[in-house]
Length: 60
Image (cartoon, rainbow, N blue to C red; front, top):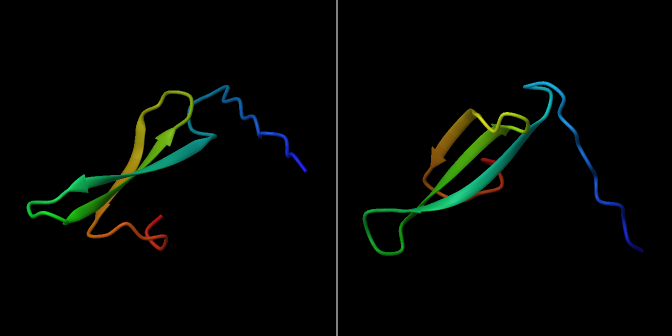
């Protein structure tokens, strides 16, 4: 069964936020940090961010 893709339309800043995760290379081979960013959907400005020593579902 196919599900309809949700559509969100922001008409003003702040009612809809989205988030993203990326891995940043550390100082040593095999060391990565998780960068978690919360963005406003309309203006694409950064609402908040966090850098952690691991990529983990608990942090997101």
